[in-house]
Length: 181
Length: 134
Image (cartoon, rainbow over all chains, first blue to last red; front, side):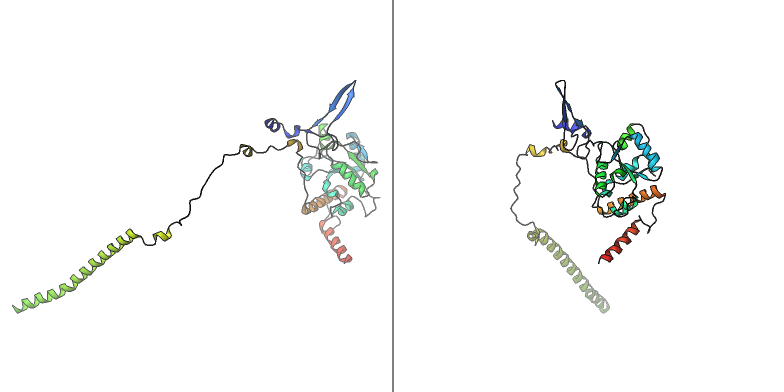
């Protein structure tokens, strides 16, 4: 038993799918089928929903490319990478800016300085940039948490975008990752 | 005849101190050897320098408990990924690195020291607001 546990790679361990559900079952023609998951432990690496919050638009790759062309090209949007600096330095989506999730925490005493850089003047969000947020992948809760913190701070939900695929989803399609300078 | 007598008398007078010196040296050597032998034989003070007369400690050994030798096997099913913790100094660095990156992306230049968005500007503003509130 012990040898079997130690011989099994950690990433292949059975883990929960979401924070509240370890597995799912359904019936097909009277046969019960189960959905289980193996990989990084959940939490924190739980499968994330498509919609991060009410009013926040979710993007797939083509919509994100359009966002890069229109919003970032037009100087009205920013693509935020919420991973830690080490992961960001290893490879990020082109045009992304590294804003780790911890910097958006309400307990961060310097958050107002960051909000000022994002175009927020006190409680005035009229000049706030349109933000597209992404993390490591579809099981990274960082973008969803960041959306919650920004909306809680008053950031307009219509100015937020959520790219659920993250860096791993982008790379899995063969799209380029840029190494930040 | 008289000259020969006086010569032999003076020679006898000069031999007496030399003989006494030899006897004195011999006695000192004998005393030294005797004292050395006495010290070696009796070794005064040897009992004080010796180890104190303590009862010998008793060392016993129980049979090893085999169940305590085997290390406990961690429950890997409950293992979680390491969570990155951010301290006060690093959160400041993270935030101002992020601000510099945002400024670079939006204006093309990172904020210069003292300009809005820089750590110096933030520190000055905080200091001024703190003084104003006092």
